[in-house]
Image 1 (cartoon, rainbow, N blue to C red):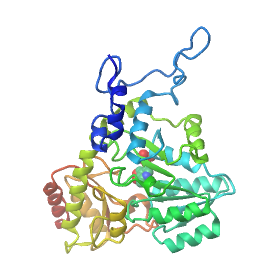
Image 2 (image 1 turned 180 degrees about the vertical axis):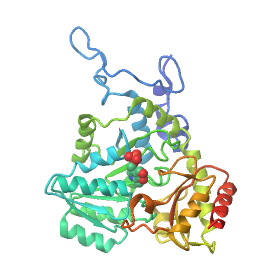
Image 3 (image 1 turned 30 degrees about the vertical axis):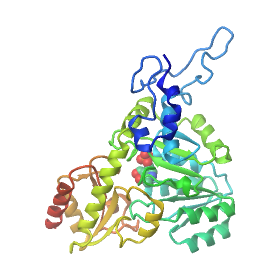
Image 4 (image 1 turned 135 degrees about the horizontal axis):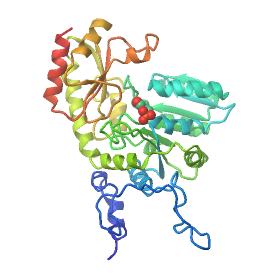
Length: 392
Ligand code: PLP
């Protein structure tokens, strides 16, 4: 009896992403027929009497893990990329990308992105004699000037940004980086590959915190980097660095991630619809100054978002309230269904007062609430925010 994996290789290659995801990348266990994979626990693999590996692709589990390979293959397919590598967290993945840049070189980093990424770049560049220039990547003219002036080795952007939901033009930036010989890396965590595939827009590398919507259940830390070109120098470094520096995902986390991915299409569909409905409901609310969400036709960057994204605009948004910081904190405290916690992309809706986290000099308005919209019944989410705003 042959395995489904080989028998249906052509089918899996032609499937819609939703079907491939439902089947966890396709195939069943060749020996037992199990429809879900086992969790590989072995760290090391034996050699025969001639000292050849029993399996040439299994030596030591820091790199040689069949479940990693399965999840990486699935994510590379979703991204329309060449290869992926899983990491222990989103930041471990970003750290490996950062280390592709050598002392003496320059990185252009988009300003106003996830705070943890900014802090990490600042610390790393300072200690390693790498020039770091922070620039608003949605201002193409300013970015182009910086690229011409500094000839960076890497441009790192986040699309859309967390927490301002700004949308940079990946295609246009890629034309600039290609002309300058720089690597373009896009953090697309806030939307998932079902909504946006940066590699098809010209990016060289795309990174996700798999902790967020890829897994979707707020129960694992993970990261994944995918390359457009498996032969590039940057990818060669990242592959070797993952194994050498050892920031690998645990097998159990890889198993949980694959389980989460099986429902990604459904979760993205519901979360997008909820976020769009929520944003449209509160945008005209007199208690709300503005709703930052690329799905709103009035949003800065909406046309670009429409051109770069399919299947909706993601589950992250920020709402800026009228009034002051104290009122915003009061509304946050009055929410009952939204949980007051950091992170995003999970099935449960979360709220965060970002300025409290990042500090008064961070540029985050004290009236801004960052919302990660989950899969709940939309009227329940609206009712919860409505009663919280009434409590101010
Ligand atoms: N990128 C973005 C956009 C994020 O929001 C985060 C975390 O919030 C990360 C990267 C870091 O991911 P992790 O927490 O998995 O290290």
